[in-house]
Image 1 (cartoon, rainbow, N blue to C red):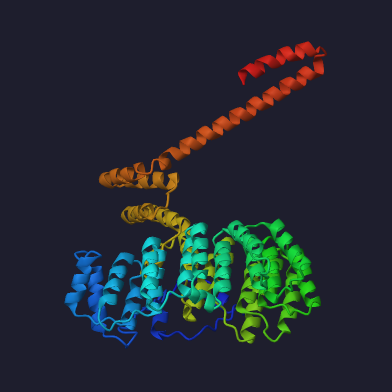
Image 2 (cartoon, helix red, strand yellow; image 1 turned 60 degrees about the horizontal axis):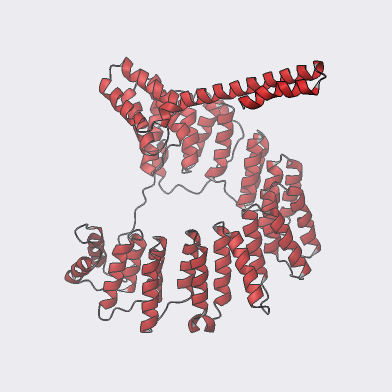
Length: 561
């Protein structure tokens, strides 16, 4: 078994700790490896309603740079003899969503083929691709052309896609015009989709930080249509938006307005308020709302309990958090995986591993299985206390139980290994990370480069540093100096020159230390000057009684300034 050579394993694993009973490993033979990697194989033909050969042909044409979007690509598609259908087009749209121009040519070509009817779903998929690429003009050309020809669609989903994408692009005015245009169509008016699109507009604005625009349009609608009564869902959207913008005064103003207009809050309303106040570290207000909703006969849901329990745990008020947990346990729904996650996280951060372990046992008894995220909290705790052996043993148990590490697990493990100078295992983990598509964070990269330099493996250290710069991570000045020293010590003149060229391409890396020194010197000089002037003025006030003399002594300072 390829595991960590640990001296304390038998004593550590003999302790009653961390029940590990995850889902069954789909490939038991791989548990002997340090990190098991499950291959993600895409089925050859997930949709049997089309010919896989046609999909392969279209994929090759779309990927071929000799067939640019437009007439050239359409001619190549004609020659291929493909019979396009909804299932085939949908699969192509799913796999080539980042190629809007090629897909637009394919969509136009498919519409010209006899017997090929473009469904509303395919049309909306095309609009989604164009809107994601911010090709709004092309999207509108398709919409207006389809309306002019009297084809099926566009529908409410079409305009919802555009509204969301305009909001994502920070373009509120076009989003509002899209809503107003959609509401002018008979199709939208007859289907009663106008209010749904209005709520989608407000929701998109609030999610993208445009809550002021959402509020303004909300007020405009109330003025232009006095008979319109906002639904509780609309108020919930705006409350969420104001919380996201950290505008508590606006939240309180809107909440008071709801009460004055006798708008009956729902469990979602209270959940929004309680979660928002907890995120603002105002758990006392959240608890007051909790009891208020109980008095109103509204049963708190998981969002309410989880928010309060998490914030009480973050504040170190574990007795109150566990008391709230007891109330949650008696409900039919009961705690969720997020509830247990919050408690485990907070106990681990407080260093109370015993209580965190009790929470894990409690959740297993109730049919929940711990996640890799929960075990990351334990690993982070051991890292903070520099308990390397315990952390390595826990990781070994996690892997033997069939868990698959996530990116945070790798980062913690890499730091543990680098601090223990276990380079071979660190490089093995690094390789596994690359195989899974994970990159090291700046801290892990820096520690690995320094460890490689310590072990005099400068070629590998140079490659890691080069990869850091390629990914946009700015190496520390100390890392650059260490790397340069090791290269010169081993006589790697060419690599030293190349490293210098790379660092010159980012000049702030070299200027940063001296700039900091200059800033610190200037700041220190200003502080010294201010203190000296203050002392001089104090002495003058103690000894001088003539106001004219004070004016004379102040003039040089004024001139100097």
